[in-house]
Length: 146
Image (cartoon, rainbow, N blue to C red):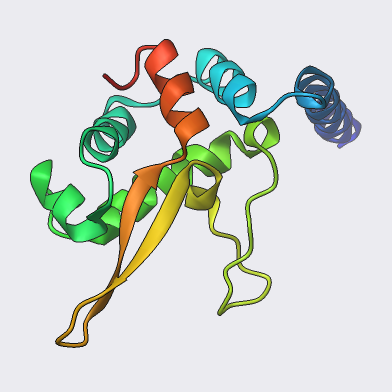
């Protein structure tokens, strides 16, 4: 029992140290430098990179179009990919913004993506996905997007 607690405490100490180390690296950095550091230290999975490439090469597309372009069914896949990779790198990228309509719930994708609202004359409303300019430059510099 004591060994289990010791290991748990050691893991907690390592996590605290990691958080402090990352905070020291990024405290005075802008988004470009944060992106460079985040993706150099934690490269994306191939399926995540595929989504980022699609967004980068087709700015302002809706999430469903992005998903279908890479052979997936709907925006859920895109949300999962971008939200997950941003959440994994939140220490590097900064605090994720809250959703306007759901207080307390974060939109991790908002760390890298500018969502452009569109409303068609027939009534449907949708959002275009565009990489923030600094995110695009950083992802290009580390070779993730073209």
